[in-house]
View 1: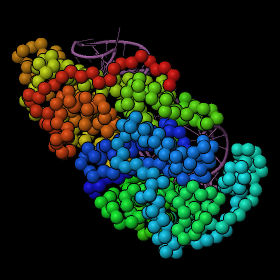
View 2: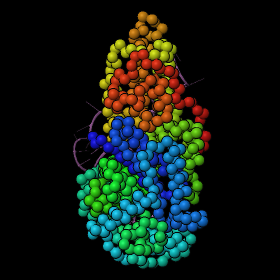
View 3: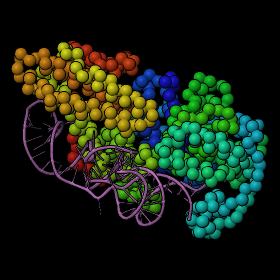
View 4: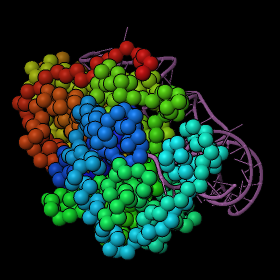
Length: 515
RNA sequence: GGCCUGGUAGCUCAGCGGACAGAGCAUCUGACUCAUAAUCGGAAAGACCUCGGUUCGAAUCCGAGCCAGGCUACCA
């Protein structure tokens, strides 16, 4: 296993208001990043904001500020979200930062030198009111009228720089054939493959009809299109556009680019082609998740039913951040179909998993030790019986799932360990044996095994439930920060004599109110 | 229009050629009482969308159809 681990979110467009989509993507990356760090991997978790383009320019104008001021304001909002949800990104890159702009220009120069750029005429359906081009499909959908103001679209022409995407078709095909996991989930890979078979056109990569962007080197009036500008963030953040900050170079290639399915084409096709042109290694995997829908309805501006920041904060303040993360990660749209966010399902998940399983199991084990052994970890005179092997198996399964970005199965493995502890207690009945002083050794053994299994489960749950698992660890005297991963998850870490206090991690709450 | 994905217990989903179809939640029921009215056991619950085909054998493979959703390049 390589020693570095790196993961990225897309950089978020500053014209959007933060909603559950942004928080979801960033949270699943956060879980993975925490899991990797916990295992001692040198981890780099990147997010940021995409700040160029005609839309930003226009919004800024409408608000009477400069584009930079507008971008500053909205980027700050995205930064605030990271704080709010305790997301542990290692860097936050903005496409208007000099470090990014300079490297993008250098990278474009390299593309030019590699002979994959050329100047050509672009013609398309132009929306004069919005000052942008529509794709053929979208133009047709809207009846060749502006989707915004209904005025007819016009055919317009301009001269642009093009990227010779078509030249990379064979290599892209080879990529998708030889690395079936390059795009996940599989349904998304199939979509890309299908489109690849239809053939590739070259793509324009500059515009001349607006100025809020990175200038094309050596060609005044041309601005580098936002998509290429934005894609490059993944390597400019690491200093790969120049050699001035080599300490971050080992983080490339990224293990995972986690994205929403709407931007799959750029990440699965254009991005690898650009990297091929630059002769740089490709990311290990582009993971395209699906979307949340809300109480059975697609979220849209017209319905005004986005799960926005206030709505999310409502859940967090009622149920806690752990609960919000848990629901998103274990029930969220990580596979190829969209997932419904329902207040009732949220509540049921909270009660079943966090209150009844994680909370209650921790509580009964710590309570029995508090009562029977005055809050001191008893000796395990039977050395754990089946438990050491069982825990080792679960830890391995968890590690394997985590490595593959299978967050649901990783969570299930961890919580399954607690279900086993519950079953073990019911079978061995330590609470009954405790009434017979002659069987104290048995009780000691049973409870020691339970506490140790709970401790290990708590470690595995920590990336998902960082807040309350910290509480659990301090309640059972786990030496989290001082131990390396291997020793931490090994059976027997909880020494006899350690102080143990009763915990109540997740309070039982009244039924859900509408979110 | 083209391509892709899904249609399995009340709900969310797993299984994707082989023995009576599985899990979690919900329901009913028995046990237990250490624990947050919790936990553990048991039960009930399914023409595995339809029709046809391949096969000794199909939820699982193939074909057609129906239903739902997605993608269709400059909207991050």
